Amino acid sequence: MLFFALKFVHILCAILAVGFNAAYGLILGRARRGGLDGREMAFALKTVKVMDDRVANPCYVLLGVTGVSMVMLEGYSWSYKWIHASLALLVVVAVLGLAFYTPTLRRQIEILETRGVADPEFARVSTRGALLGSILGVIVIAIVALMVYKPS
Image (cartoon, rainbow, N blue to C red; front, top):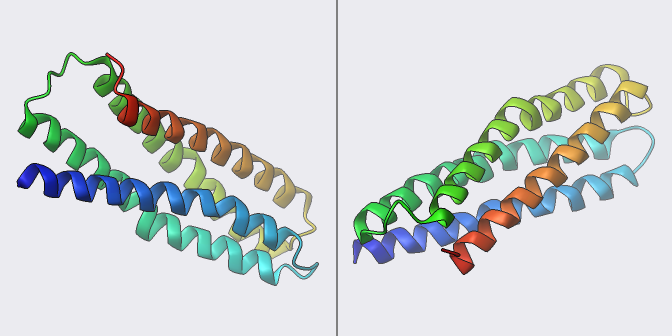
């Protein structure tokens, strides 16, 4: 019964984390078309930051905890390559997210509030944020594929 409870939490966290992350591009893309004063973009960036800090990132932590717990509880062999690859990619996502994406998002908000949406540095930092988000998205999709297909 414990295994199925862990699996439920694991899958729920994956849905929430990946779903929230997928929404960032849509939210920010719509804000880009919102107006020249930057109010929509400020709201969008702050919303994405809250979604990332309070939902997506905690879900990724729980994914790691529940995943490792299920491996230990169910007696999966640690020699499976899909387990190693998934854990390694989760660490990569955590490092990229915490070391690069979160500071980039914070910097976007700071520049927007002090200099405005027309500032060239805001455009540069926004491009970096979009690139990082895309890279993180591809890695997360790879993790989901490993979890579904479990290649030996």
